[in-house]
Image (tube, rainbow, N blue to C red; front, side, top):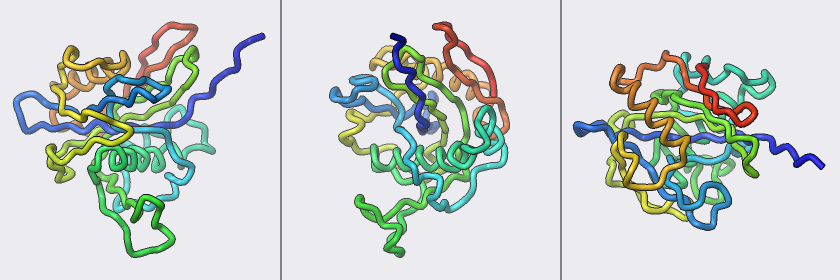
Length: 226
């Protein structure tokens, strides 16, 4: 009997960049040992898309080039989720996992208050779309993850304000060229390599460049551009 095909679930991550020093740093945290997916590895804040994320209102819109890239290689019926919804996912997960808020909390409308407290009104206007990766078919859990990037100074974030959570432990700012201090998933290291190369050529991360898309075909790793 053939093994059941696991369909990748939409997910999003945010790569926060602290460019205040000579070497850019990115925020990573260790996934708890109890996680089924990538336990004890250091990753960017993020997680799977909630069904209602695409309906959450934002303080501002995604830049047009980002909207265009997010729509590539996505079925038309899923465009709302793949564009606005995944950007919201990245910022919602950041807040839940690190306490860092990109936007503001809405405590004025009872119908938008969640079990976690006031609902998030995310600010999307400075997000860059920098990578997309699909978990290999051999994995028992699969995600189609879009990676966004944002500079801390653009969002008014104090890098010292991060706090650990049940989802991400030992949060730390890691030099973007560091591959030795903590255990990283191979795909995270690959994304960091590409992002470091892009930052070297484009320190402000303009919105227009193509986006690397990583996936596997018959066990072979593929990197193409969106």
